[in-house]
Image (cartoon, rainbow, N blue to C red; front, side, top):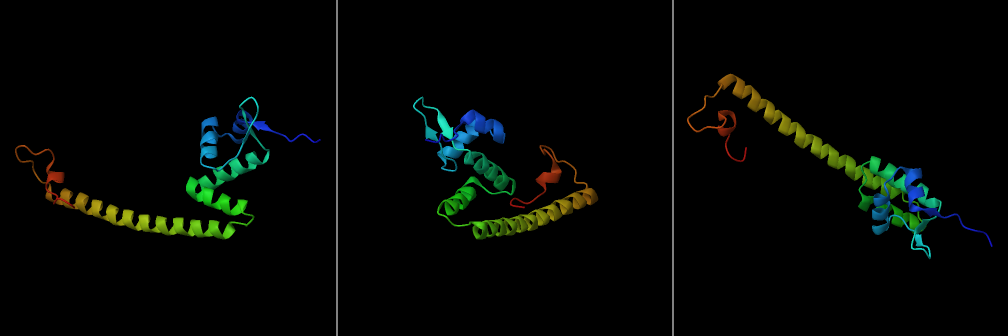
Length: 140
């Protein structure tokens, strides 16, 4: 009988540079699997190292743990999830483009306030905190 290599959670943590608590969390979410020994310890297969590294790499691309779970589920069903990965990535790119547009509009508005305040130099009235802000209409 051939013995299967089993890694304790501390060993997986050390080899992947991922905290033990994070590994437990990944397991709670179904991203990682272990088997319990008779002693109650979690034991992981050597493939767990590769899986944790995959999770870290996917996170570095901005994938959420839900996204990663979706990708891993496709993989576990025997399919190659690269189309799904590209789809998720495209969604992230589109979302970033929209956020960049929103931030550009916001920045332009702030620059307009700065320039108009520099030109008008509003003076405080009794009880004002800062006339620059207080002269703005609500909902600006």
